[in-house]
Length: 159
Image (cartoon, rainbow, N blue to C red; front, side):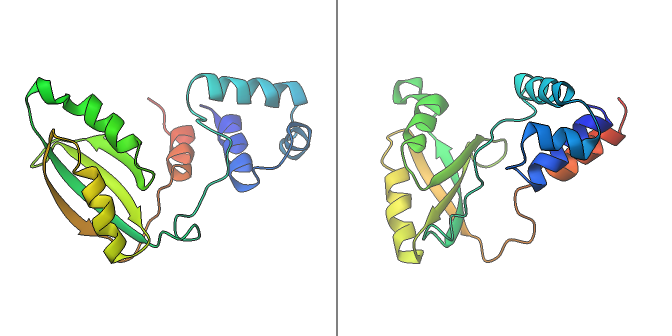
């Protein structure tokens, strides 16, 4: 990534509805350059989507929790990939990662209330390969998920 890529990412992150022609005007480069850069950033996986960012809270899911899952190590129960597929089928599961440490997987989930969180946890635990779960409820978000500062750092850092 170079400075133009960084400025392009910043522009579209700040104003996602800006068109390619307007972006070229604001950045002072040709329309074809903007389109080629966007295509390259998407093809290399730097840009992963163009959809709107959604707020779970505004959708009626104000409770966020983090589940550390312990997975049965027997392959007959499916392992991480099948557990991941099970978790992906639960709408309240926002993301899942295989981790190191005390647990095997980490999941960020949302719920309509603390009582509803029990329903979400029960749905998670329905898979026979999940042995145990420990849950931590988030009280507040000091730094929301973000990547823009990383993109800025990538344009100023040389390998």
